[in-house]
Length: 163
Image 1: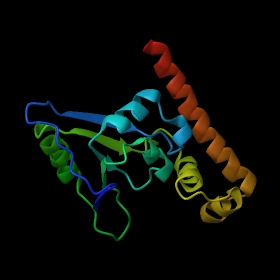
Image 2: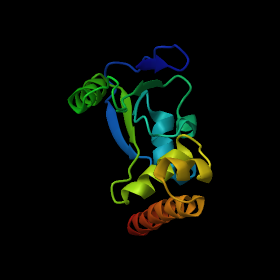
Image 3: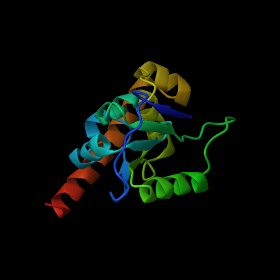
């Protein structure tokens, strides 16, 4: 699905070079987005976004940025990875600044990933998360805390290596 927030076309001149940013949105919590990622979202003409990214993350985007939803959801049609790649390249070659925004949770245990997505993307309570995962509310809270701790440690390591 493609939508334009303000319904406007942006003209950037044919000589302007395009750019593609690959942005990891961590576990989907808008508070954990890096400053560099927020700046890229503010500059982007178009944003190709995962279904799992919390809507609050897109508050960093320009009001006239085109938002292209590319998330996969069981049983529903979705944009293939090949088409996403082609879209990024074509837009950049046309002079647009394009951001690819994804939730990045690969290093986490599956239940931690699920808990943090349910918490921040769907804004469920720990009790609701516990029902979805078949665990106690205390364990659901622990899973979310583990996921957030992992992301914060990783961001601190990255910040330390890139002054």
